[in-house]
Every structure is written in C-alpha cells, then in structure tokens.
Length: 254
Image (cartoon, rainbow, N blue to C red; front, top):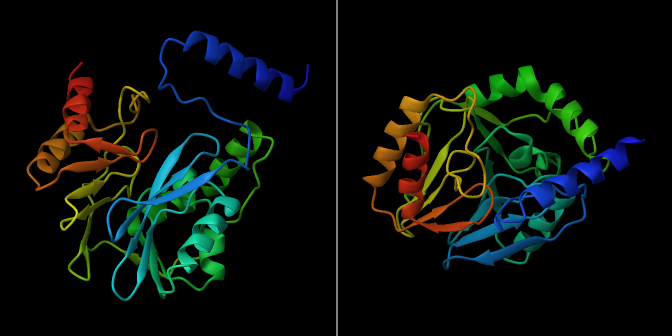
C-alpha cells in the first residue's frame, strides 16, 4: 500500500472520528486551495489560506505603505497575496514574521523576490537556523504537494518592540511555545493578531507539549487589559470576540 493511499485512509478515519465536531480542521494534501483576502476595516485586511491546515495572516494598508504579517503556506499562496496587494497601488514597506512555523513563513521567497524587507525576531531566527531543514523534510513527507524551499535571507533580525507609524505595535511575550512568536496590536482597530499563540481550543488542541503554561496564562491576562474588541486567530476561524481569551484560559487551567 503506497503512501498516498495510506494518507487518504488516515484522512477518512479522522473525518469519521471527528464528524461530530464541525469545526475540526482536516488537513488537505493540496497546494491549490483558495486564498481569501477581505477587509476588516479601512486599513486592515484578513488573509485566509485554505491550503493544508487553514491559517490566517494580515495585510495593513496605511496612507503611504502596505505591511504584511505572515506569508501564507506556500509560494502559490504568497503570489495570490501579492497580486491582490498590488491592486492597492502603494509601496510594500515590509513583512513581519509573526510565527516561525512553516504555515506562516513558507511563502517568503515570493516576498523577497519583490525586494520587500523581511523582519524577524532574533529568537525566531535562531529557531529557524536549527529547524528549517527538519521542518521542510517533515512536510515533504506529510504532503505529496509540498515543495521543499531553502531558508530565505532576512533583512533585519531584532529583539526590539516595534511601533509602525504609531498605528501598529509588535511585541514579544517571551517563549511560550516556539521561540519568536510575536503579537501584533492595532490600537485604532482594537484588534490583536495572535499568530500561532491565539487559537480557539474548540478548533485546535492548543499545544500540549513544550509549552510554558504559566507564561501563557500571564500573557492572556495581559492581553485582556488592552483596549481590544477583536482577536484574529492564526488558525481556524479568523475573527473572534474577546471571549476566545476566556476559552483559552479555561483550556489551560484544565
């Protein structure tokens, strides 16, 4: 029995086992799924990438520039994001790596070809140095449609809190899951983008291994004190109310 048949049987088994949970995210062995881009506000756009496990990233359009937060699963996803962004007829100012996992970074090559500056936290960079090839090989074996990519070059490696045009705050809560996972706060929109740190436990089992539970709980408490109305999750359903923070705390306290 070949790997493709085994994979399809596994997916069918997961589908049957989880059919009672309509939100359960089933991976797709595909690099041709839809990438949806739509406005949340006049400035902020949500990007939903339906390849493999559904992930969400962001595009921010200021009066002068466009900023990106994560790249999508693949080069194909990244091309769709860039094609859409070019219709706004503004210069691309930079892309910020919010999570160093492949689902948020694997399309970087397309952004670099457009000469867009790439910014990454120093701990995320160190993590990728040690894990890029391993992660690429893992996904190559998992999905027959996966294209192995070499590790890209980064424009700036930083450990500073970033303030962009006084409209965007980027900060590092410390290592909770994987080093270098960042949080983006949009005060005007009252939105937090959580990358791989804010995900509904009803859709994904929040990481049970190698997690700093105490720091995670402290981090959620700090987020709750901000003037926010909406959480944009890194995976699954994109837009949530602040109630998702209570869901995560309840899950972590189990």
